Length: 129
Image (cartoon, rainbow, N blue to C red; front, side, top):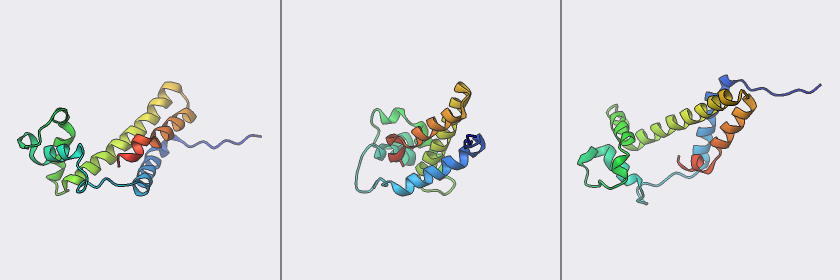
């Protein structure tokens, strides 16, 4: 008799959250005070909107997330933590969405978990936190 382990879809959100927290703890954080990459434009947009002196293409065309973070900062959260919150929520939505979409498209829970873990452990998703 062959026994298989079936992990129900109700565990997707807690497992996704656990993976994101573990990956965040185990991977490097971006030092926004030492290095100046794309995020300086997004931080400026989040703080000052279109009134910032750091308006540059193509960053100014991607204003939705910085403006969302600006709204979050009105609750008392810092700009940097606002971006972190948006990142965590985006990762959770992406991972749960991948799982449920693949399960719906293939009618396979095993395939959905494989797609979930491949996405969770891909280089892009590991390094953005």
